[in-house]
Image 1 (spheres, rainbow, N blue to C red):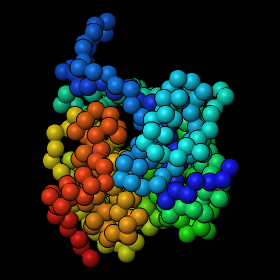
Image 2 (tube, helix red, strand yellow):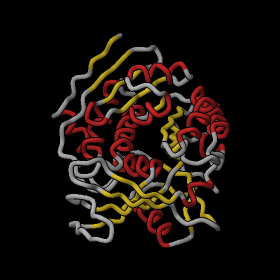
Image 3 (tube, rainbow, N blue to C red):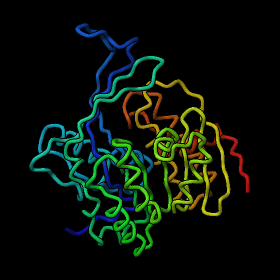
Image 4 (cartoon, rainbow, N blue to C red):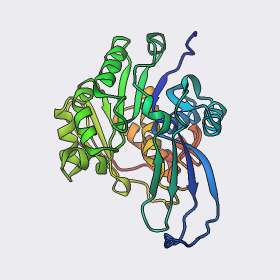
Length: 322
């Protein structure tokens, strides 16, 4: 295979999401409640970030695994329709495509029912050096969900990326709490940018303060740490331990699914354009705000000019403590 040049390579979770528009309440056992619509959309950290980046006119490829089934065909068609290179997506001979039922109840946080499926077979070692040699950023999303994508494997992948001067980016999903605590210490020293949310960080560190969470991850070896805090914005510690804090955009949330992944895509867009960290945060916040206003992880995210126009019209005040 001759690798297609991609500025960003995304490794990790590929999922088919079945998302319900907000319902007024969870129905009691044995009863039915209606919703305005049920949508089949693409999901999973790697898929979401890849699609969002493609909408920002970034050349992006994805590495992962899907089942040889209807949902697998659906997600591959969606990825390709959104101009994501799928040359490194493999078909599983034994597992179904990963899928999530996303239940949105008005005024409450979303609920998930998930089948890990073919994602359990991802090791993180699938990408060849030829692909890494043509990339600028390497993103691993969904770290911690399955044992095969181990700390040792991610650290090895990131070291190979560094040999090609590729910046490494790590995001997590909390499945087994003990597993993520075991896997992270080996991967974190090879991570240039770590992007957990504060709930994930609290589970990993036992700390509730996002600044303390970020400081612990910096001590663990991550060069720059961004902790997203939902409606409370974002905090960041860079490689010089400078502190940055930004609020979030106040928008009406329909479905929070994919909001964190959209933030990641905007932040990586800024990195690719060699923007300062404050601008990267502005792009990330704008993408996150655009995502949560519609149902689905990637359905309503901004395209490049929409994001740039939104940032220009709605700048956030970012505090910097040098």
